[in-house]
Image (cartoon, rainbow, N blue to C red; front, side, top):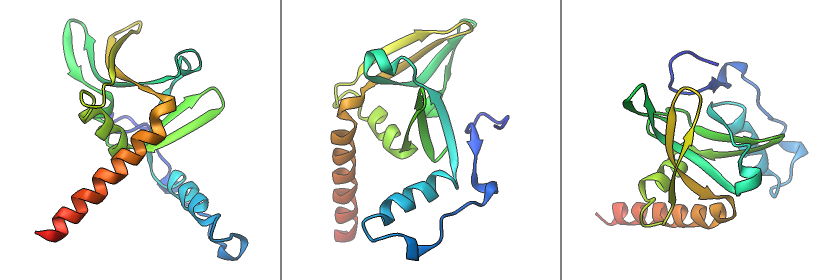
Length: 153
């Protein structure tokens, strides 16, 4: 953990990596690359225990503390990965992807929500877990189109 509010944990100092290319097939390589990314970067960890009953991720972007609003969550995170835990299950997504969903929340028709914690009220969006792969495809397609337009300039 850290004390600078930019991310929750930086795993890069551990310097762990799966390197033996002879053990893995080409089909397994993307999984190995994903694990290597997971164990070598910064994470924002979010306990999403309510996802079990709601089937939504709650992605905070603002909070109200002592009658004052503050940007938070996806707005302020400098972690490379947003890592959601649901009991023993871990889901991890690039921050830029979750930030893209937040930025496009109105056109994607994401529901706004709030949660009351003991010390503050958090404001966020609900991302239906069953839509995450379709959202990823939209994000990737938009990225490819943007790159294509940049090449055409």
